[in-house]
Image: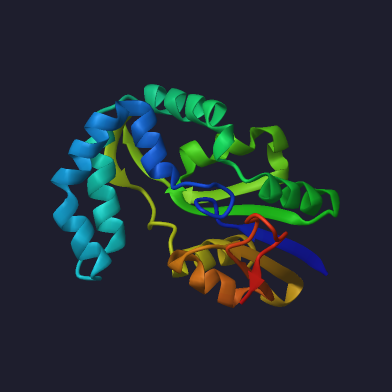
Length: 206
């Protein structure tokens, strides 16, 4: 039976949320703080579940990146991954290499924008698939809107099902660390919550 290993990215394979790190990398800490202060009411409402997660995220993303040329945005994504290797958890990368060596399919499923997630795994080439939130581009300019649903919660399972629709045909191992991974971990045959922390190899099973 085929083995599929699905990894969340932010907090699972990384030590920090890469949306915040990417904004800081591109715009600096001062503008990042100003942008989040301007949207703080939406973020509070989101935490209270009074405002959709994806809408708050899109509003923040749009404020920082709407109007940027897609070529510049992609250059920032490549540079960010190149300069941010310190964010990756070594045990997580080791588990990915192990899965590839064993012949498993490896999928990174992240709520982050796939443009900056993908370059972190360039060394693996086509051996790794990346599913993330995709952004809309028109006339070679970032519009600030999302082209797909935010890859969070049930959407992670939906993305996996789009790739592997016949559930009985594979064994699924999933790794996650937050509320956004709950559905994916529950869907898996074996789910690991907050793995790759110091002192333990794969974390606690669900």
